[in-house]
Length: 273
Image 1 (cartoon, one colour):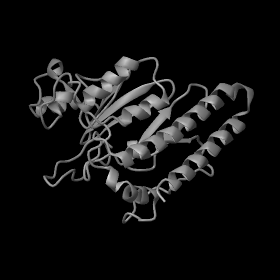
Image 2: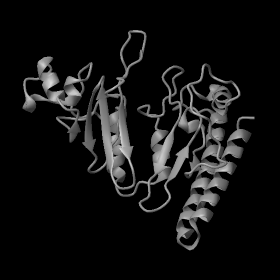
Image 3: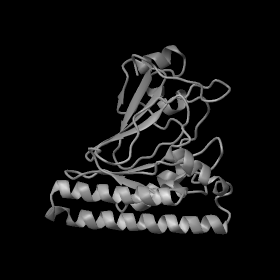
C-alpha cells in the first residue's frame, strides 16, 4: 500500500474510500486501518469489530514511520500527545463511543454480551441483524457477501461463506483449505456481471424479499424458515465432526466437511430454481 497507494471514487462526490481490516489467525489478531499511504495497527487484546469508518484511537500499537510528524506538519494535531488517528484522519466527526443503535455500537455490544461463548452460528445471526442494519437491504447500499471464520489453534480452521447477497436470504456453506472440489471462481477483475453466476441468479430470485426486512412477509418468512432449518442442520453436522476429529484422520475430517459443502450448495441451488 505504501508503494501503490489506494483510492477509487466511493460516490458521486468523489470521496476516496479507504479501508479498515481485521487480520487474524488462531493465535492473534490485528486491526489495520488506512488513509491514503498512511496506516496504523492496533493489536486486539480482547474482542474487536470494525465498520465503515476509522476506529483506532490514539497512536495505535504499530504505525507507519513519520505518520505523527506528517499529521503535525499538516496541522491535524499539535504534537505526539495530541495525535488521535481516528479523529484526525476521519472526514467527519466521529463519537468517542458509538451508541448501541449504530452498526459499530451494536456489533461491539453483541461481542461484549457473548464474550467467551461465541459460536459460528451466533456470528451468522449477528450478520443478519436488521434493527441497526448490519444486514443491509438497500438496492444500492447492501450486503454483497458474508463470511464467518472459525479459527482453531492447532486444528483445521473452518470458513463459512454465503456466496450470495444479503446474509439473511442465504445459507452459509463450510469450507476447509486447501480447496479441492469445492465451488469457487477464479479471481477477477471481471468486465461485467455474469447473469449465470449463482450470486446473480440468487439476487434475482430474492428481489421480492429485499424490502422492509423487519415487516412480516409470509412468503419470505417461510423462505427464512427453510434456510435456517437447513443451515442449523449443517452447523450441527459440522459440530459433530469436530467432536469426533481426534478419532479420525485429518484427511477424513476435511473430506466430511467438503461433502457437507457440496450438500449446502445443492440446497442453495434448489432454493432459487
